[in-house]
Amino acid sequence: MAGTTDFVARRKPAWDQLAALVERAGAQGVRGLSRDDLRALGPLYRRAASDLAYARLRGAEPQLVAYLNDLVGRAHGLLYAERGPGFGRLWRFIAVGFPRLLRARRAYVLLAAATFFFGGFLSAGITAANPRAARIFVPHVVENPEYYKNLPKDISDAQRPFFSAFLMQNNIRVAVMAFAVGMLGGFPTLLLLFYNGLPIGSLAVQQHHAGYDVVLWSFLLPHGVPELTAIFIAGGAGMLVGHALVAPGELSRKDALTVAGRDAVRLLLGTVLLFVIAGLIESFISPTALPAAFKFTFAALGAAGMWFYFTRGKEPHSSSA
Image (cartoon, rainbow, N blue to C red; front, side, top):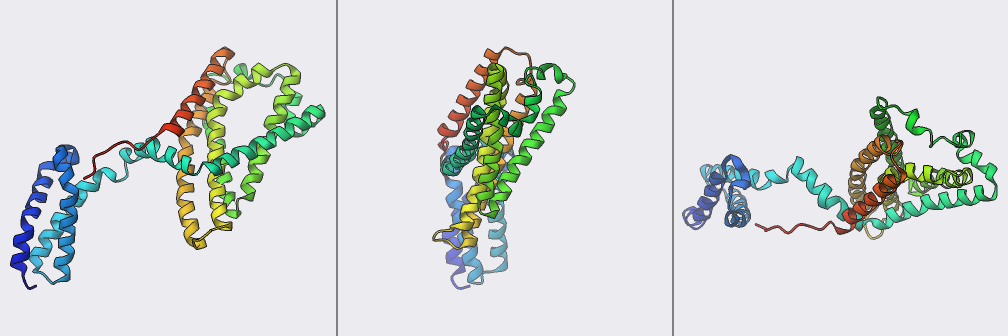
């Protein structure tokens, strides 16, 4: 490689500075560097990587290529170690990535919610017009109108952990199904959401006629807030994929599915925590003998907290290297 001496002479101070930063970081990683060091790390790494590519392209001496390769490798490990898989990345997704993605794809989630509630309002109207129709939508409650009133004594303390695990598993299964059938074009997801909304409306009317409004809603609302939100998000994820399949727009169908699929899977993963929370509430708060006022307050605070989380989560300020 012609001009190696001049190349090394011009670039070596930057290499030495990068090597010093890597040594200074040591076992602590980027946490061992000052703010000024962090600002310098990114540009120095990019220059060294560019120099390595240039040296390889121009056929530089093997010793120089090996030195730069080692330096760039160590700097890369330092610079990107904090961005790799782990708790930090998971926390960033939960705190920032998930609510931001949800806001970007909210149209699909809102459509999922509207479809579910349309089924609920339709069955409520049918049951109000003909109370016998409740046997079609909620036969187990028609046969036992005090079903929800008796739940606190029907589930013992020893059974609650198993009940919670069963509910989480069942709800996650419904969410995965709503997501999966979206790959058939989105319409099956709408149908599934509509079908799952039917019992809610009929149940509300049936329990109103039986005089158990407070019993019903004090049971449903505490866990229903996170549970239904998660189901709507999962349904929205399914419709996102279905829309990309049916109407890819200016992208090829493959590219549209790739983009939509990536966001849809992340939306689905974000619902797991909501389902875990809902399952715990549905076992340890909803079916207990706690006062109805407490349960309604708990549900309201949960709804307010979720609204704040989904609408106010912003990208934290960070200094870029």
